[in-house]
Image 1 (cartoon, rainbow, N blue to C red):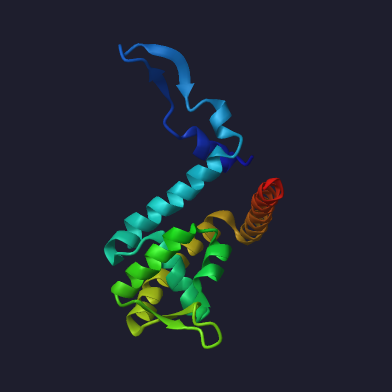
Image 2 (tube, rainbow, N blue to C red; image 1 turned 90 degrees about the vertical axis):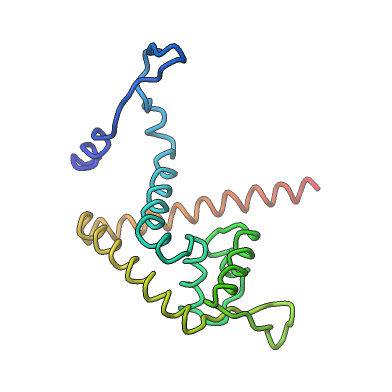
Length: 184
């Protein structure tokens, strides 16, 4: 682990766990077990989400799922919900509710697919395209800061590692789904 990362991790507030009487039970929090084993991935995800909400989500009235639907619809006009669910690994109901909210906000429109009327294609309205510009500027700002901090080589390496992790976790989920299907 780099010295810079060590200093970031050590700068976190250590504290002691206390029982209800206020006396310490003698352990530092967080224990080393929480710094390993993937718990830090959840922290990273939470921090990205909190930063998004504090920086642009609240002021623009969109949440992270809505932002990803807007982004997907911008780069792939006519995208369908299933494609968004599969790519972003979102819950089906979360996407369905977010699409309805975005439609009510006037940021997107749904059109029935010409070949399969059950499938709705999603298109941004002009307001949705404007929202994408705002969200894209935020994403560029964050990416620029991360790239400045990590440097070009580490940024590429990090991105490749993230893609491998996504592949691994997706395969594990699919494997579990297959085992459940086999047991039925």
